Picture 1 (cartoon, rainbow, N blue to C red):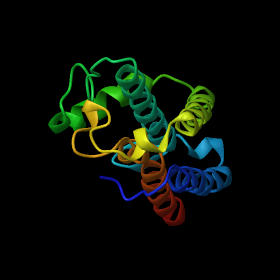
Picture 2: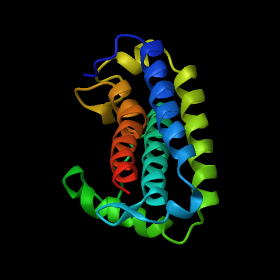
Picture 3: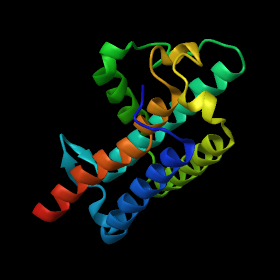
Picture 4: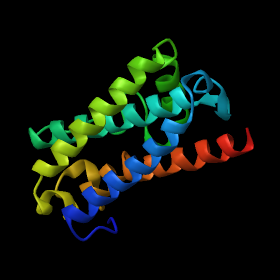
Length: 164
């Protein structure tokens, strides 16, 4: 179960963490966003990763809401295979431009916010509301694909930027 007690609390955290990351990103020139930050990943890679996980979470939700059983985390990978899934995500977006990645980063974030805003507190905060969430609630999944992911990216990027 997530630590959230209201939809507004989740939305506030998403917006706050995104704003903090965006402030940091605004200080970094585009020319530096292709430099390795951590484990060979660039700022562009980190943004593509976060965007794809948010997109996947939205897809799981839409499938479950329509009565289907989403393949979580994907049709190809299980939870214990996340390194391989993340490597596939990185490879899939390796040739995308920084502009494309940043555009999708914004578009998918806005879609996620709109989607969460339209959700009821019950579907967000009730464990087992959707079968794919298991014993947790949808808010934990949303947080993992948004606020928590933004926070982890910010910490990695800030450390790299300070050391640079």
